[in-house]
Amino acid sequence: MARAVPNSRKAINTAVAWTIAILIFFPILWTVLTSFKTEATAIADPPVFLAFDWTLENYTAVQERSDYFRHFWNSVVISLGSTIIGLIIAIPAAWAMAFVPGRQTKNVLMWMLSTKMLPPVGVLVPLYLIFRDWGLLDTRLGLVIVLTLINLPIIVWMLYTYFREIPVDILEAARMDGAGLASEVIYVLTPMAVPGIASTLLLNIILAWNEAFWTLNLTAANAAPLTAFIASYSSPEGLFYAKLSAASTMAIAPILIMGWFSQKQLVRGLTFGAVK
Amino acid sequence: MGNITLEKVQKKFGETEVIPPLDLAIEDGEFVVFVGPSGCGKSTLLRLIAGLEDVSSGEIRIDGKPATDLPPAKRGLAMVFQSYALYPHMSVRKNIAFPLKMAGLNAEEQNKRVERAAAVLNLTDYLDRRPGQLSGGQRQRVAIGRSIVREPAAFLFDEPLSNLDAALRVGMRLEITELHERLKTTMIYVTHDQVEAMTMADKIVVLRAGHVEQVGSPLELYRNPRNLFVAGFIGSPKMNLMTGEHAARHDCTTIGVRPEHMRIVEEGGTFTGRIIVSEHLGSDTFFHVEIPGMDEPMTVRADGEIGLRHGDTIHLEPEARQIHRFDEKGLRLA
Image (cartoon, rainbow over all chains, first blue to last red; front, top):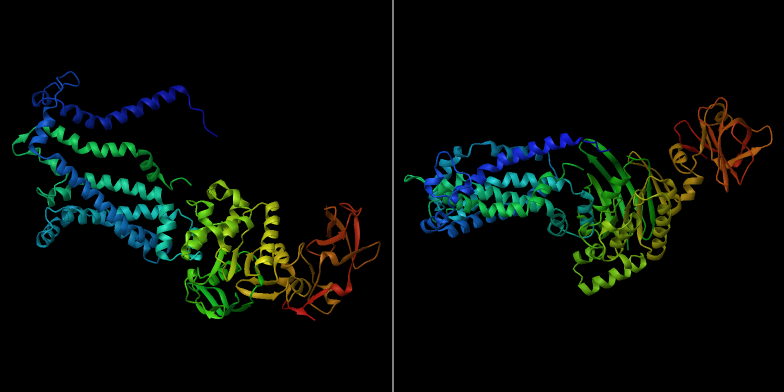
């Protein structure tokens, strides 16, 4: 039975929730606002909130100085590429772990997770040298490989949790119906796991899109995605807050829009299996 | 053709032996029921035949050909699961057509066979629905439809009626029996419900802790249970079992008398007791009688309506020719 919540309590809860939401959202809002200010207004003290002369000059300047669309395209290729390759590797892996677990399955899963606890900078030098020797520095292929490997543990873990929710009877029924391993995975498991796979896909695109450590360290010009595009505005020439904000807004806009439209799917996927 | 033979088939999970080496022959076209209490290994045995579990040792032959190492898809068997195990993302039509698609049949042939199966199972109106939109009975029929379209060598049923309510269960029981009459295909049916076993089987295999206790036709098992376990398990209500002086009088350790083989007599009789519960079904009446000196109440079946009530004294006489005798090991004495 639902408990009755007094109205005063509801009002307080609402106020607290809004305060937290605005606190979290404020930096993003501030960035967007700053992107429409002149460099002078951007560093004005006291800061100006809304009453300033709105201008698009930063956007023009940013697009003139660096090619936004090239970086954007690099981001798309790198995040989509690494996610799709990751899924192709992770679906069979998660299938095996969820439906035919061996004695070491739990350990393998923990080991995979443990790699996420290692500070990436610890492997930067060896990886950099390998990339240099193999000619992968500043290539999209190189970044796709690195981001696939970096995010693979998360993809496998997420899929593993979703797959465990699928009744094994149904897969056995498919085997009895004459399905081989490939048919079982393609026709039965994957379509049933679509909500889980979709949210894994979305989350990984976001993670790969926002990934800055490897993208900044392993690219220079050719393969640089939007993270590098933003970083180029905190340059030796000094800080240009307004232009930096414009670059940031342009970089986060696509992923923000994607996240907005898929929020239902994302939330559902992330809480999938939490309540049965 | 669908004869299945098991030779010394054994199953271990780690160190635990679930099925000790077991031999069993199932003839083509037979309706065989594996029955036993939960945990007796009947489902495991079925899954071994299906190929969903690997045997630890021994050999399985289907149609005379070795099948021990074949994957489930290659054994030519169809299975109906307790949970129905329908594909939730496919329509009824696609569910039923799935085995045909896997067998590589063309769309036209798939459709023809699906329509035919749907007509047999009264599913024609539901072909375009998803399993989630069907009732339990309909889902079970789809599961059966999916298994018949492929014309398998044998059908395996794993407690298919356990999730249905009582009325539906009786109906589906008849439908499955009828299906067997029509198809004449080998069927292996697992259940813990001895009524299902008695009513459907050509041959019953009674299992306990992985051991085959007895194999035979329902009436053979009913009339000549080989041991106390089978005697107690087959028949509803259960056979009355008595030890001590009652058994000693018949030169054995235990005697068993079925409820319908106890006659109610006016006076005297071997047993005299007090009725603790009387169940009036109209066609029959069951009395549960407390007999001084016996641990469990005795069950008696009487034809029609008998005017005895709770608390009344009753005199009982077992029919001499219907007394089952068992030795100290629980084995039947001739």
